[in-house]
Amino acid sequence: MKRLAQAPNIAIATLWVDLLSQGSVAATVQRAFSSSIAGEIPPDQALPEVWVVDDNDHARATVLLDQLRNLPHERWLCAGCDELVEGPFAQCWNCGAMREVGPRLI
Image (tube, rainbow, N blue to C red):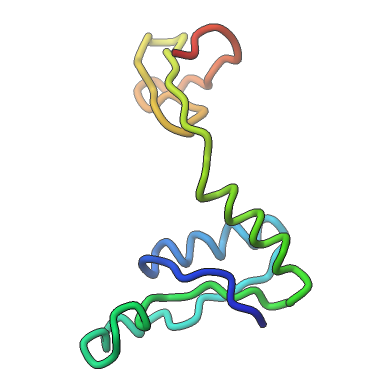
């Protein structure tokens, strides 16, 4: 096993592990509950960590995690309701229409 990253909280660490598993990379969350002893040890040592099970997958996991952390953020107008949608979303939060590829990007 090889450490991949330290996460800011257990929810993010679990999300990262789930997304890595969707990319066929086996990973686990370590130190999941160590935040409860943050006063006894340095706070940065109490954060959850994501570890890759197979050392050979570490390079691919690093790329996948980097892509996850740096999703493209766009602004686009929904064709269904003209709502402005920001962020890495492909679906309108207001009406549920999918983003159309084309000139409606802002």
